[in-house]
Length: 322
Image (cartoon, rainbow, N blue to C red; front, side):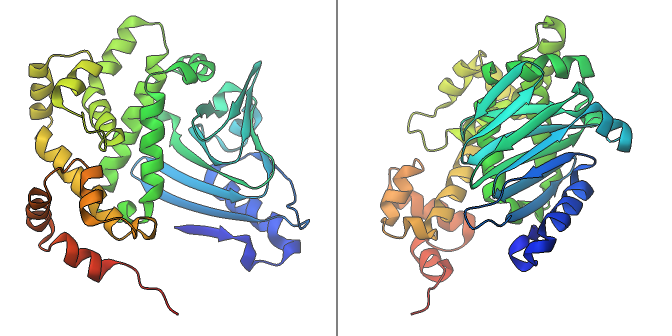
């Protein structure tokens, strides 16, 4: 959902309106701005809510954003933020830890950890997940310990893929009946991310067990187009037996093969009407999503959506004017 586009605001009022919007969404913070090539400040801010998780996409000219313990005292809103760069290069600073951010990185920050800052220069965009610390339900000291170690976590690429998937379909997913479940799954991944870099074995193991199904499903989402994505591979990656994998899914009310097929169908349906895939054949798109038989793909697609891939592409694709 669009929260603010400064293109609709007089240049002399843009910074004031942007800062008021950010304060209303994220609580007390500090912000400095870098003008664009035309000498003007320009920002587009979008936001969505998935149960306990807020998702923001901030695009435009360069900026510096920071939070401190003083900001926490000012509004008593202790939040944990997961930050990812979408376009351009940024930087994250916390105490002696400094990290360059690209589209392959993410970081965790929290007001209770004291001063931290997030910057980028030039045109760019970044994503922020924001969750109340009480929802994370982990000691502040554990979160602080994890902050400089996040890049080494095996959960980082899973959560990063999950975040980008949320951003891509945020408008549709926010209005879906399962939006709260999506938020809970995201929360579980953030908890798993933090716990994965902590040396306290008992706590790490407890959270790993609690979030295993969520991590398995996130891994599958991130590798849906891999032709060798099999139950055996999924089990091996998560260091469990095939029997344990099926039991885990069954206990969670998930039919593993059907879950994978449904998500692959959703990906294929999306690509069939995406402008960037307009030049590709239906069979090529189906193969990308793991369907090697055109007849099998058509049969599955019709069963799921009540129409054929060809008809869906012809009727649902956006039209362009002359």
